Length: 396
Image 1 (cartoon, one colour):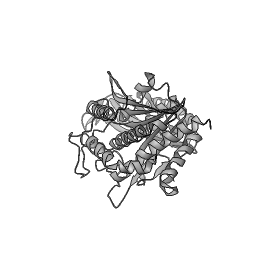
Image 2 (cartoon, rainbow, N blue to C red):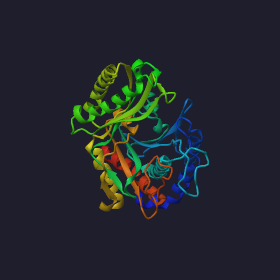
Image 3 (cartoon, helix red, strand yellow):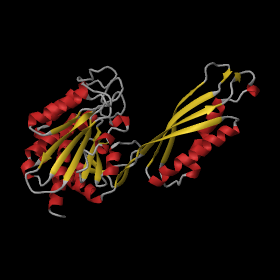
Image 4 (cartoon, rainbow, N blue to C red):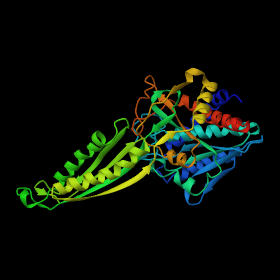
């Protein structure tokens, strides 16, 4: 099958699916109507689909008609964000305060388009394709359910994709090695002694101690970390104080840590704990650190798969249809699937287009996308799966 041509023929249907999903966004773990829409669409095509009594999302399975022992997984995420939409599109969200501001409606419709393509081509596929419509990516832990419950145990390779507003619209962006950062979060609670603001000598100021801790945390980045390893330590939330003239006895800070290498990730907690406790002590206070390991970094570690992805894009759209992706410091819970299935690859589909006003970053209330590129995502999904199965069937 000419996947590029057939995907373009299906473009109107892919856009129709995307607009329905965009108008009816649902938050993480609550994607019941989204799941129902997907299941109905897949069953209408005749594609077997698996659902879960205790979880949202679904897995469609397409068994090829030719001999082949391998199974490849294609994944698209389905959840939205708690954002009030201000994109100006005519099909804005009908769920107040909920918006597909990260393109998950695009991923879902592209994967549904790929399901249509692969179902039509099933007799020529030498192996099996699983399509995971995954819940709760924005909650950091959404992919773990399917992995931990063994629903992906038979998968040999996996591919995920994300529309990306820093890349040229319609181009497939591929990169070997580090692509997206790990995400770990922390909470620091500082305890002091309260007193009147006019008599600071009688208190131990938790705000001052927290401020010193905040500044000293950056020494992890500038003086402890190897500068060849990218590292970000951010405090994004501080809660402290009850009134202007009271030296408070408690301050709470919350933040996030982003990096790429496992070695860098491993050293942060120990050094942060020492800085937190010792800095607080220097101010006459105490402090405790809660550290949460959320998502590992996303690394395209299998050069065979990035090669298949590149060649698929070139086969579909020529050399002009592909560019080298740039590293991003955002995180992606496909990394958990990647940890369990080492033969995995993650791609970006560029969606930046000044002429069409598609210039806003993900998680922005004005985020929008040129829908005419969605069929390209469907074609890349399908071409990658077909090429992987063909390659493995030939023993290459």
